Length: 476
Image (cartoon, rainbow, N blue to C red; front, side, top):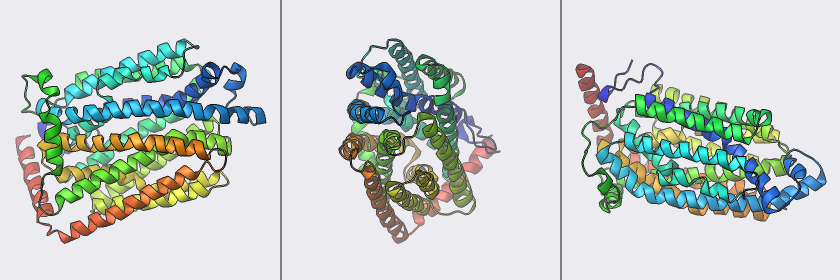
């Protein structure tokens, strides 16, 4: 039993109230992510192009040459809508990240979490209304995102979530706790992905979004009732006025770029860049992967959700093995585990890009097995290089870089896929290979910098964590 400061008890399994709340969000997100794509394609076909509803309903589920031809007509137009939506969401999140992370360092994490969850609940209510009116243009799916955009967006929520974890963990166990956190999210992804297509087949779009809305409401209630504030000495006055203070983004950039001993500034910037590029590739592939598998291998929605479920199982076990066995028990350095993850992803991208039969898609997922530790190990190492009161600013800077680069990455993947759809739709996978290879090289540079440093910083960090743990246990 590990009892952490501020009275947070993770227990033997490492679960916190915060991770349970976030798992509900991941469940609802994956529950309707593929459904969103399906609905966008269907509305593009019926409303934007005015095609027959019966033929539009067969898209992705028929080997008829006429339906395949219709698919190639509909997909590029649906991709444009998806690209514009990603641009709007990414730009708004990037702007808000300038203020949310620094604000939470002063006034607390919980208010940001609660406000974001309120936005998600409202977004799902709007999606229910959108699905009820069948003649509404798919472009209005952008409008459906307005509630979550105005309340912070997904980037702001992630910024505060990882800052919260930094608050309630010590340097020794932070990597393990972040691994548990992402494992819980992966389990939610598995449940949501596996169930969405079957629920949709059994009922309709309206009920799917209603279930997602109910899940987000549960997450909101859980956050309000069971998640304590992680900052005991937060400020209470002038909260609203301070949110848009220009000193917030200035402080974020100052903290991220300030000079640090033992190459730590260079290491921080390398970590931010590699993780941002990693998510660009992952998000970019996710945005077109379903369309790619539909076009090249005629996968149905149910087959794709089964594939997502299988990769989620791999991701869960990978995260547990990498974080718990290799890092927590065998004490393998975070940087080496991150490097092995990027190398495996690069090889997997090549295998998937060259695939001529769909079993190689599964083989590529197995090859990429070590990648489950990339995100928790990167965030763990990043949090160890800064003071706890700087965590919000650093994670905000990371999410800002990620969102700004995504504004370039998402359109690039969509444009590349549309341009090669008629010749070789797998070209986008070689773009991912290039990104993962670049990240592997950046990690080699990072490891060299770590070896050149004296190691005094890391040794003192461990000593401080041990002293903090002893202090916490004596006060418990």
